[in-house]
Length: 131
Image (tube, rainbow, N blue to C red; front, side):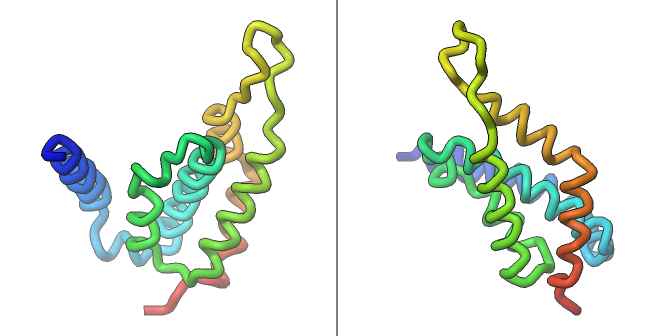
């Protein structure tokens, strides 16, 4: 139990340090919010891809993004729905030696980097909250 607690505290402090590099002024910038929402998309995509592994139970990343992002809950729902739909389209490998496994992380990264995702994230500006 102590080991779990130590790892949990270490994980939280690492995440806070990563986001701590962003100033409050940076977090208010639309471009920063978009980039963080896009990262949230990647996070959700990977989590959905490994739903059977229950990584969402052991990882707090989605909660951290939820706390630092300045979007209404509708944006988070749209991102989750989109990522979930995308993951469902990832086909198993046709290579017999790969046992019909899917390239989930690679596919999610490709989707994250795509112009289509950038456009989708930009469309969610309507859900940005005013200060």
